[in-house]
Image (cartoon, rainbow over the protein chains, first blue to last red):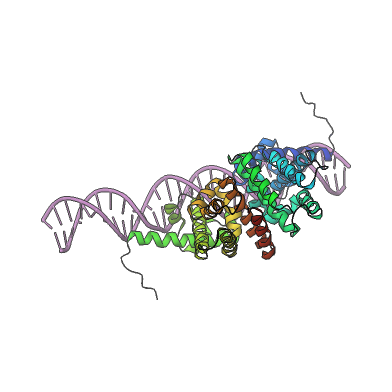
Length: 196
Length: 196
DNA sequence: CTCTTGCATACATGCAGCCTGTATGTTAAT
DNA sequence: ATTAACATACAGGCTGCATGTATGCAAGAG
């Protein structure tokens, strides 16, 4: 039996309800998509009312943004935890990709982050959020590899954007039933082609 | 003055209303997105009523699918018209990419096809539609290049999927303000890395 | 060959249900 | 007391369907 304290600070109250909302929203957005998951259902699952939702979040989209931000943060953490920062620049890229695929393999996370989020939040806003949470890892790795002369010298930001597209589509393909080994093989071949 | 014939065959009636609906929906979906463009506004712009819409299309999503199908067909046509099928396999890939970027440069077409459509129709269904309308061009080009020994031997379908991700993200980046020259440069470098 | 008669197709209109965002009221913290 | 954290009620809009109407169409009777 959970003893609910007689006196909860406002900070605690806010924290519990917002996290309950984000958790409930996450599940429903995952299973039914953004448009398919209505706020009545979300608040019911979170055990609060719509009033609480619209008190803490400006609108449904803001709640969705909070969910995505949490997902991006989780993915970044998971990659960083598996990051062999001592490895050679090129291998770090390949290993980072593998960690990314592992992190994206949870449930329908791929669809949420790569399909739904761009449509709801816009590609630009999502890109900004991604940069905050470790989306620069790839760019830094490429920068290091380029400065070491390991890979060809190309416009850094554009190359990072293009290669991240590769990883994104790879995650999508894997979730769609493609062979993860083949995807890895193709990506390694492409990265290998950039070596000098 | 347009003389409207006293006797229009049913086939003609259907054709005019459906094309009017698709044209109106296209514009509004482009400017306001799928969720932002309501059916009342669409039918008003098309000069028909919601009854006509739901008679010819199962639901709003089906109308959207028809719009996307038309767009994909237009893109495929535009690429095919610019296709130098006599060129060497490798150059054909590069030129095809350039034609793709040109075709995607119209208005907000990129956002509609690459952002909105996957979210509304699902990635799988969109992929099927794309295959019908010339999305196999890339795969065929790669197949030819591989059989000629021009590029490395890799799983064909996976490679095509990955490279199409490259082109898609490139179109997105260009629309987002990136330098088209840089995008082309990076893509050529990546393709070049696959040469044998 | 024409005309009428029955049916299917192409719409138009109104309704029911749901959802979002806001405004107002109430309770608990500070 | 004042503000923050909710709860509740309401207004507007939108989607899908059900019902009603007119028009094209195909087939048989004359």
